[in-house]
Length: 320
Image (cartoon, rainbow, N blue to C red; front, top):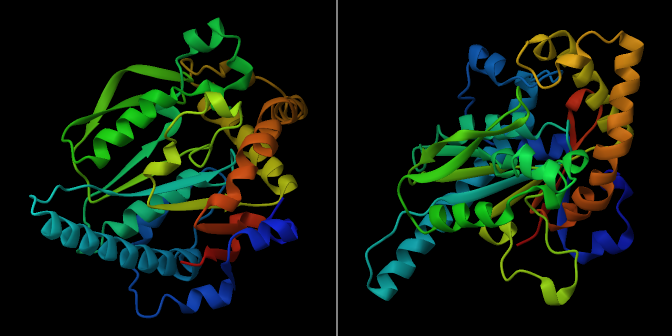
């Protein structure tokens, strides 16, 4: 389901500005292009061509908007510290990026990290994906959740919230678990992040709230730590096609690595690989999108609606 398919109730729930691509592109104003052709190539996603036009018309206006928000928030923190008479604590501005598997979240996160780090007010931009906060495969197997990897219950949400609490409190040297898509599991080693100006958190369910019994609901959610949230949206059939195309590309590349968890798929014929990808989509990714991910779209501050070829066609921005 895309923005155009939102119900009247969804549209009315939160006031928003709805921009065509051309209208949104004009909001770039004089924001300069700060990425080179070589950098654009490095930022490409799998089966997702990143054009100069896409950066210029979609991501530069977004970079400008986010810079204004970050600067305003930094000013608000200074005012609050002055009022309270306390020493300033460097806390990052946190941006959350949500959306389906294969919709292009990782590419958007990388592009924004590169663009935002060029602004003089916030040169240190860190990027964290929620994949590292999945439960290890051993835990998922024990709980019978291997076929629900990516569903809300497959994440160590407490660990993710603890990380966000520490980083937004201004702590140095905060531990972040690492994930390998090659071995399809959380790694034993970790990386560390120290007081960035901006933190981008990218993942399927960063906008997730509670869907269980009210009396069991936690007191805090991941979304409570996010200053600005972006949802990558596209029609269901488009995302399914992108997922299958990505699977076929990986079959020819990463799956052929002897260390790959998915090595068994590398020798499939194209028709068999396509059927396998569609089966995984229908059993796992599509239900997760419909039940858990898409319902969080209305909570995002900004929705980027994609058409064919991952091209953003419309932008929906929540009113302040």
